[in-house]
Every structure is written in structure tokens, then in C-alpha cells.
Image (cartoon, rainbow, N blue to C red; front, side):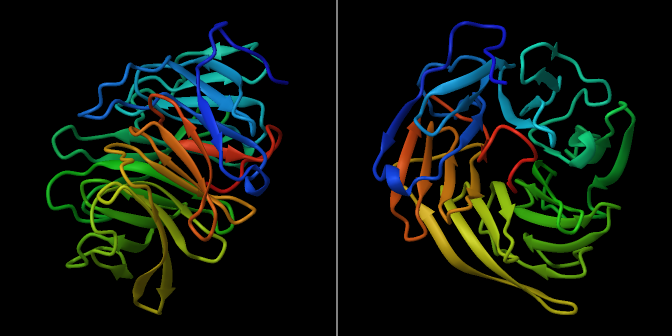
Length: 326
């Protein structure tokens, strides 16, 4: 299945194993990401690629400047990539037989996307350049698109502009969570576009029926809903991975911090990601810091993977079949 696509020059990464026996065996899908405002390291090769458990790059394909996310589809047959600032959504078959640089129905999609069972993709598509609002759009395998909801003041309030930057699909209850950097919040939505709760931001006149104000303490990017109902978040304001226990009442939501990880001197001005692994470890991606840390539940670093820059990341135990929650 693995095939080198479109180039014979693999990206270079460095793996340092602190406790190889404790690491999760599998693969990490990454992208070149974006350059931080104060970063001086050379721009990485413009490729989306896959790193195995030994730190070897085993698959790669050409990508655009500022590619922020790469995900395999639910069947494990196709890799999709997207740019941070919007543009073309690209598709590459995992066996290297097809490379499609423009995906109809997804032109302009930005930052992040999600894969759903049956081949459907969900994107963020800009709608208003002045206020930064976006539509949450689904694209079916036949190319038809459907707007789920417009992410504007009818869904959540923002003190200035809107800047949706992260989206996750949750198969357990057929829902989405979406993060917004400028509003400093994450909202949960049904697949029909109804807002269920809001974490962070201001709850004053919030459209969400349940709201926990200012819990996130600033901007965020990658996040993950855990099976326990807890929420794992990468907080750019603190360069920190944080886990919150969410408590829902009939009309209320509260959040309390139950776990966090912060690496001294490692930052991520933009992007940044988190993912809880099946063995209890957490994958923390400091995107503009160019480091991925696998961290034990006690906060011990199991391994680090280093490159010039990363985008979002996605861990998979296998390159076949559906993805793990992310």
C-alpha cells in the first residue's frame, strides 16, 4: 500500500526516544504547516508525509505552501490536504495512482477539515472577508455540497472578527466541534447545525443553551473530545495541552482542568494539536516550534519528533481502515 508519491526527496525528521517501550506504535500524518512570526528556520519541504514508530518517513506527497492538515479518508484509501489560508483541497490516492490538485466544491476551504464515514468531508469555507465568518460545509463523495451552518453571531459571539480554525467530527453522536481563535472558544454542534454548548469566550447573550465562559483563557487550535466526555485542547495562549472535565446540567456547562502539559521553551504561535492515544499517552504538536511530543499520563516525555515546522498532526495505529478519534 505504501508508495512514494511525486518526489524522490523525503522530508527529514529526527526522533529521540526517551522510553521506547512506553510509546504507542503506529504512524503520524503531518504537514509542513506555517512559519511563525519570529521563526528563522528554513522552510520545510512542501510535502504531506507519514512518520512510522521508528521515526522514519515512509510515505509522502507534494503539498501547497502552508498546508495545515492531512487526513486519510474513512476507508484508508485516500489522503486529503488543505491550506491554512484557503485555496485548493488536494487528494492523493495512498498507492500514488491519482493526484488531484483541485477538489470541486471545496475551493477556498481553510485551516482544517474532518473525514466522515462513507467518504464525506467537512470543510470551513469563508463567507465574509470583513468579519471572517465561515460556513461549515459537507462534501459528499459524488461532489455535491451542503452547508450545515454559518459560523457567525447566530452561533457564537466574537469581540472582533470570526476566525474558525479547527473542526472535529464525532461519530459517537454524529456531531461536530469547531474552535474559533478570535472568539477564544469551542462550540459543539449537531450535524444539522444546532449549537449545543459553548466552552470559552463570553456567555453574555451567547446563542448556546449551555455555556462556560472564559474557560480556555485565550486562543486555541487543535482539540479532541474524549470518550469520557472530557475535552483536550491545544492552548496557544499558554503553549499548553490542557484537558478539561466538562459537566453538563440541563441548562448549564462547567469546565475544570484535570491535566496539562507544557514544554519549557517550546512554542507554537499558530496551529498546534493534541490527540489522546489508545495507551493513555497524549500526542502534543508544537507546530511552529517544530516538535511533536508523546507524553505519558504523568507528563513524562516518551519520545520527541523534530522538524523545521509542522501543521496539525494525526496519529493512526494502522494505515488501513477508519481513523482514530482526533
